[in-house]
Amino acid sequence: MAHRFFRSVAVSALVAALALPAVADSFAGPYLAARQASYGSDYTNSARYYSEALMRDPSNPGLLENAVLAFMALGQIERAMPIARKLDGEGFQSQIAEMVITSGMVKDGQYSDVLERLEASGIGPLVDGLMKAWAQIGRGDMSEALNAFDAVAAEPGLSGFAAYHRALALASVGDFEGADKIFANGAENGLQRTRRGVMAEVEVLSQLERNTDALALLDEVFGADLDPELRQMQAALKAGEQLPFTHVRGAQDGIAEVYYTIGSALQNEASADYTLLYSRVAESLRPDHIEAILMTAELLETLNQYELASQAYKRVPADHPSFHAAEMGRAEALRESGKTEAAIEVLEQLARSQGDLPYVHSALGDLHRQERDFENAVAAYDTSIEIFESLEQHQWFLFYARGISHERLDNWEQAEADFRKALELNPEQPQVLNYLGYSLVEKQIKLDEALDMIERAVAARPDSGYIIDSLGWVLFRLGRYEEAVVQMERAAELMPVDPVVNDHLGDSFWAVGRKLEAQFQWRRALSFVDEETAEEAKPDRIRRKLEIGLDAVLQEEGSEPLKVVDGSDG
Image (cartoon, rainbow, N blue to C red; front, side, top):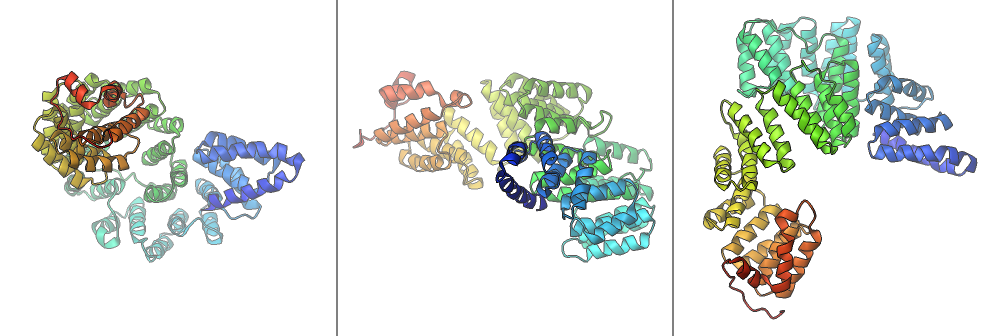
């Protein structure tokens, strides 16, 4: 990609600068600081230091492009604009600069200039093709716009993008019949159903006075579990209202949608810092594009830029139906940045203002559970479960999470009931099978059922160290020590620094008479214990085993003794 190329150019520039001692002192400092910041996706400092470096070397193409990238990532397109124009004026080709310059032209309504620029340089085949079509609409030439959409559709793998934007373009000028034909033949046109695309189709159907069909589409795609925005649409349709077509109101909105559409497609294919540029341009062209704002925030979270992510989430208005999603995202960003109390406060306030949303309470429960506040976690999960009108397969996690919280509170009866309810909803869910099976093993009850559950979990996740450890542990509890060793050794290969796995392997070695190896594993286990693992790993018990052996520890605890085979190593 272009910005990666220019990073290497900038390194060459630095080497050249270092050959001149007088220049090196003034240039190298901010450049190195900028480079370090950019590698950590620290866009604030990256923008600052690249700007400083440019004061010393104002025509360096690497510095220019990286400064543009940093300001774009910050959402400061206007500050990126003069730098992009200078890069362009110096005669350097840059995809990133093109994104900035053409977006400025779109904002100014200079669609003829956009077309000329795309012909001369451009950003990429898909972006260029769709932008040409929307620019023609901006010029008032629908015929040429449709030709441009056809040209995109002719390219391999791009027909779905062309069909979607063609439908939006037709709807934006009032041709709802034409848009409906495209949506109705979605499979034939290569269209993939997305949440935003379905909402656009619902609006088209409503404009055609087909509210019944619109309601059926919502039910077919989303079922009964609708988020607030979809519920609002559903309520309006049921009330007989005609929904306005709001997804694209003109050419500028259409080009914003181009960047959002491609950004969405890139999310799982390209790096987050590159995809971020698309979402930033989309929200710059259309500041009320809530989905683009949420995409920006999620990408910033992925890049560990939690403060910037939180700022992005806060841009979603409190009266917007997606406000709850933004606040839940903001709470997560706050938690990731270590501001747990602030995160809990955000979710508690949201639970008060939008208490009818079960996912708000489940998110609050998750946060309490992560903070080991299991009583409040149970209370939040209780509320969430009560709100759901019906239970579906994907809600297994609610019962699983509440079960874990009950189990940590020593409420085993309630915990087991929740785990079994989770399995009722999703019978082969490996996490639940493993957790319940392991819990039964720890309590030394229903061991045959526990073995069956864990074997099913292993079949689903054969490379999970946690689950392999559980299998070894149930075999150990059943007295099948040799088989246990095989599984424990496999678990230790998969999770070599986990203290519990190493402790279990030590016990298994001890049970088959390999006492020196057992002591070695116990010492390894102790070396890996930290604050997070101390409660489960029980380091004091491991030290006691090293002092007097596993048999004596079991005797002290009043547990059933092992059938130990004398080994030749101890």
